[in-house]
Image 1 (tube, rainbow, N blue to C red):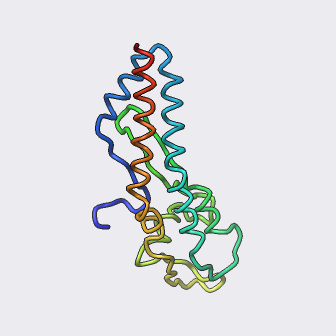
Image 2: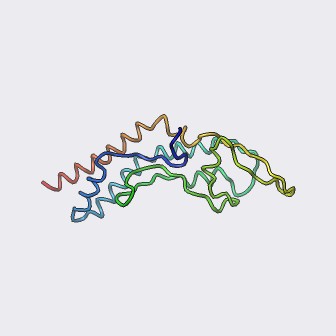
Image 3: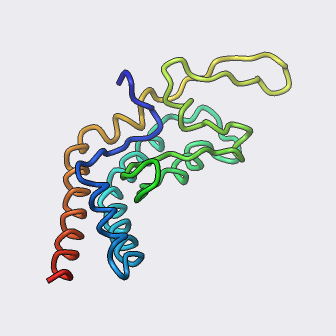
Length: 166
């Protein structure tokens, strides 16, 4: 997966900027944008669920609180942004700053090199291994299906706009 950010998956869609401009031009574009964003998020919900099951399938060596895997799973969400510097839809794993000072937990748990942790009470460090590429592997098989679902949500909104123009 060279060249890809391991923590987010984005979908680049042709004509997305034109669709965003058409939404802004509509009288009630705010509601149309909300509906489009909701449709695109709903299209990516299965991908988000796959990523959540990917982290939950990682083995747990210890039972410390707060639980690392469930905290990461709670931070995985589909994200849609219309306009601005970046427009598109993606599944994103947000940072987890409150989990034992491990803000980049989603990124580190899938790294091949693992992450360093201090052994409690000894002051020595060790490397802990996670599950390599759990985020990417969870969504790769369904990637074309998720992309198609986002395209369909965009097409439905384009039809809605075209019907309003008539």
